[in-house]
Amino acid sequence: MGKQTDVSLPAKRRGEAMIRFAVLRPHIEEGVPLVRAAEAAGVPVRTARRWLACFRQDAINRFVVEHNESPKPFVWRADPDAITAARSRGLQALESVH
Image (tube, rainbow, N blue to C red):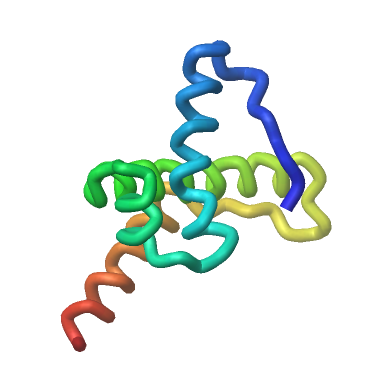
């Protein structure tokens, strides 16, 4: 995974985003349980979950925009919020089974 920088963010927000990603990176890239990554960084688990949800939503939004810039031949019409909502419903269904 290459290093990307969102230059559209002001410097302060970009710094905050990089700090948050540093906390999430072990979970995202290495499969470390989120609870363990949060505890190692001294961040409340609930906060890490919120950051991860934002990270995923931003990734979905970026994917849709980038894909639709040069669609071949498919144009992505699904609303990114609907994708996230469907994912949440699926996770809730899985959690209710166990």
